[in-house]
Length: 89
Image (cartoon, rainbow, N blue to C red; front, top):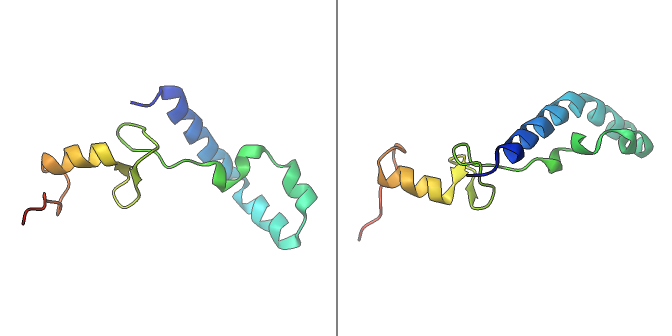
């Protein structure tokens, strides 16, 4: 389980990105790079990290399911993810 502070920090970054999205788009259209540099550092969308919705883990993240590989495997084996079954041949 990821530390609570990391998860909360990522949520705060997401709010900042959303807050400055329109301003960033406007400055980019004007090609005003000095104005972009004056915005907060966390206003850029590349600062966000994909995190598992259940454990908060950032590595091994599966975009399609929104969780980490370990959480995905547990859910698939327990039948909690619809349409996913263990392969057998």
